[in-house]
Length: 88
Ligand code: FES
Image (cartoon, rainbow, N blue to C red; front, side, top):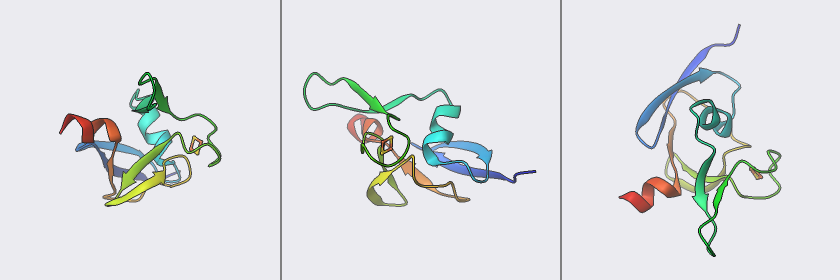
């Protein structure tokens, strides 16, 4: 059985199983888009899921431009989306 891991996504605590990616944790909470395109502000989030498209970028533990689909959750991880930065 996988172990529960709690991370923070835009200051909201989220608990998922170990081995889950950050993108998986976000989608488990119903978040499907956390960025927007420069032109027309169309929604961006998980697209390829294999680290090729860079649509899923987030800031993880103060490191910007991390691919959410390629990073596995770690206890206490702090994830900040562009959407949250724009609201601040
Ligand atoms: S969804 Fe394409 S790089 Fe993450």
